[in-house]
Amino acid sequence: MITTSPEKPSIIDSVWPLLGLISIAFHLWLVFSGLVPNLVSRPIHLMLAVPWILMVPGRSMVLTVSGWLLGTAGLAAAAWIVFNESALGDQYGSLSGQGQVLVACVLLVCVLEMARRAIGWPLPMVAALALAYGLLGQHVPGEFGYAGMPLNSFLGTLTIAEGGIWGSLTGVSVSIVAIFVIFGAVLNAGEAGQGFMNLASAAAGHLRGGAGKVSVISSALFGSISGSASANVASTGAITLPAMTRLGYPRRLAGAIEAVASSGGQIMPPLMGAGAFVMVELTGVPYTGIMAAALLPAILYFAAVWIGIDAYAVKLGLAALPADQRPTFQAVALTTSFFLFPFATLLWGMFASDYTPQYAACMAILVGALLLLTGADLRFDAKRTASRLVAAARTAGQQIAVIASIILCASIIVGVLGMTGLGVKVTSVILSLSGQSLWPALLLTALACMLLGMEVPTTAAYVICVSVAGPALTALGLEPLQTHLFVFWFALLSTITPPVCGAVFIAAGMVEENWLKVAGTAMKLGIGLYLIPLGMIANPDLIALDTHPYWALFSMLKVGAGLALVSYGLIASRRWFTGLGIGAAGLVLLFLPMGSASA
Image (tube, rainbow, N blue to C red; front, side, top):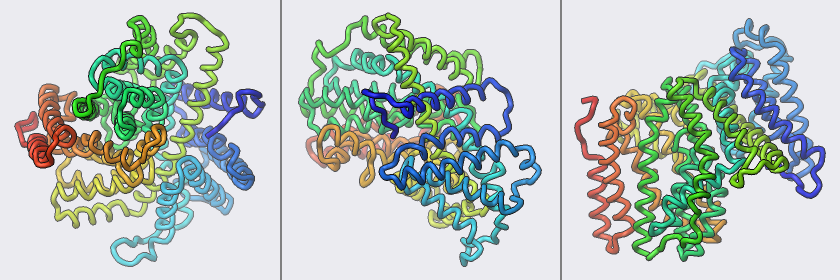
């Protein structure tokens, strides 16, 4: 995390907004510049990320100095790729000479260390193991061994061709994810966040359990642009958690509501924590198709949380928000316009004008940037506007760098899986263990997703799991989009499921409650996160909103009724056997076969 001193801003502090502005300008320029060679745009993407991750003050002088040394070497290696792009294309992914081998090694080490500093050890450790397998796999006995590759070809494919760190996943990060990160940063720098809170308070504050329901709506809105459960908890939770505790919510419940509601941001279109854009690349389904498929399950998730909060409100006698804590109509109308206009521009660009998502997002960024000129007071304040622009530039630059670190590292794993055939071998193991049956294979995949998601970010866990387990599930009859959404949802489980549950940890710390108590309540409230992916498999029309809207809505009502019964049985029932019966009835309804559009 980059910190500044508000009292005496230094020259170093002023560099970060400038770097952020350069990153914003570059990624926006790519949208309008036409075709830029991938071995130019993608290495520059890495170069723009390096300072934010490696060249910031570390916890010790050793970390600081090593970061600067490695960062400088990484910048030089990436710049070498850019300036030699034409010549490298003639080498067909094979390194020539010891100098190029050194460049490749520097790039790989740089990517691994960037991921470690950005998100911790687990993901780079998996990537390092993948590299070790690629280099030494010929010595592995049995079916998991492979014939091996020449060192120059193996390293070259990963670093000077488009089969490794400059592959299609990095392309998604460069051309789409970065644009939507900028969009979110611009909105968050202005009044949009307060607009989310005011709209949520006006819509749900007057209901029983109103403070909890405000958290659901605000987290869904905020999460749709932030795509991060942790950021969502920290931002909306700063407002909703004190409100809930003041109104007498048990601290475990207040923390659980915020953690569960915030986790839904990664499944709520349009951003989905960068997962939607990666899914476009891996499935070939247009972005609008991904949004349509993800929308109804996301609504069901938040509806199930809403029902759970209502059950707790009845059980515990939780009242509505006091009238003096609810915003006026004028405040709601003014502040909501700060996100409605940019969102309307985004949707108009994608659906009415048929622009690409990134082009539509650029127009929405322009509208959002213009709105930074004023606030809810409708006054122009040059100092406030400058402060907002600086905040947007810093946030966008840093978030682009963190996502780039994750995607580049995950690309190493995907590249090795493709080159060595390890993914095919893991797929065969899944098919063998499941006895060629779909539901056992789904459960094995779900377990793998949850375990991997405990250690790496959702998007990275999704990419790795779908690379190895996706082919097995499609071989057993699932549509590709079903497979990808199933894996993506289960990769998200670790946000609320012990022993590693990031959203719960943050929320528990903010309400000063034992995290295990918060996690237990969060798992009840977030039951939809466990059941809806299975509901997508049992009811495939649930994700067919764009092709069969009526059947999709019918499936949503059926699955929603089942979820409501399960949630009520878990939370509101006062006797365990009654709750068990109600929950069982809900599960039956959730998975009950019915006619479908595909029949």
